Length: 64
Image 1 (cartoon, helix red, strand yellow):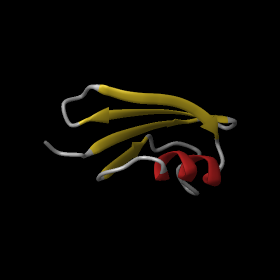
Image 2 (cartoon, rainbow, N blue to C red):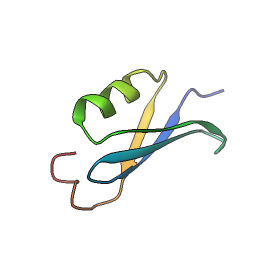
Image 3 (cartoon, rainbow, N blue to C red):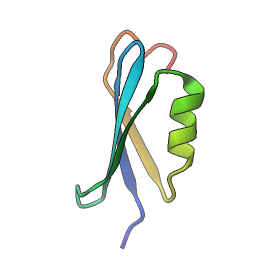
Image 4 (cartoon, one colour):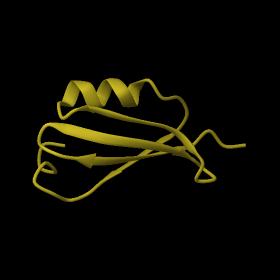
């Protein structure tokens, strides 16, 4: 069994919604964090395995 995790970020000015799925599309966890590099990085660094991250090309994409 693979330990890959798929992370989706819905980034807004003040908050970012995060969802984490396993390789079968099963929900592992979800959270809302502040839209700050340290908050997003801290959340993702708490995950194990191979992490695949995706986010929408929007106004926050330049720094993200």
